[in-house]
Image (cartoon, rainbow, N blue to C red; front, side, top):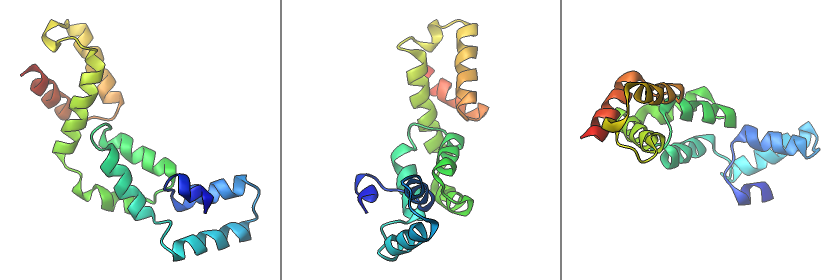
Length: 140
């Protein structure tokens, strides 16, 4: 229970923490069933909250990988991303471009610098059409 006081966790994350703490598999199963029975662990709620608080800063692909790393099942990830639209991704791309340009104006950058910025955004998981739209919005 004390692990859940500090932050919300997924079922897998809680099981991993308990296993590393030296609890037996039987004790871990019992503890997870106990906290799930009271609704303290809910992977769907975790994924919804995770997406809600991070959708303006990370690409869809990056959010997906982070959720998978936390142990959120694929079907829950698909369900949560139903409401994640192109505008959410565009807002996140604009946020990343703001960070990447480091206070410089996009028009003042030469082609090489802009290409490096586009490559950085692509590595972060943004699709090229979204990157172009975000750069266009920033130029305006």
